[in-house]
Length: 157
Ligand code: FES
Image (cartoon, rainbow, N blue to C red):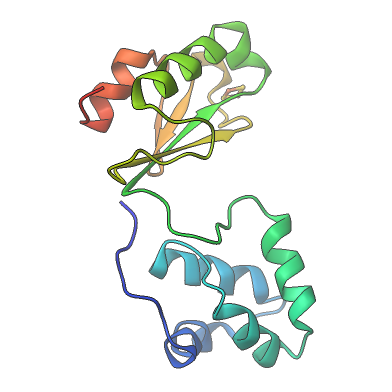
């Protein structure tokens, strides 16, 4: 489930990252902490991180955009990641993904119109022996098909 907290102020962001300032290489832990609270990394975080870490805003932005795990806008209330890597492909993962997305009416990185579900690709979940694999809000699912995924999501599709 993603956070529904309101857009944060610079002060809110400082409060979240303050406990992490003593870490070596604190930017990634800070970004994870911010995303854990607000469900994404809001634009307001860039100048705050640049200031706290004594970096340029472009450097901070570059790190956020390099790592796919960080999103710059809120996701749906549930995030479904479907594996697109080789082992899952060999057991029909692509067809599972296509059927699931068709039933939800979204494409990769899309969110259903009611904001219920965002579907994202993932490139191996370490469940290669029990593919097709997926992950729903951090919970891994093996040997999935579209029926199972739709059922797990609890949506009508
Ligand atoms: S290839 Fe899909 S879990 Fe490894």
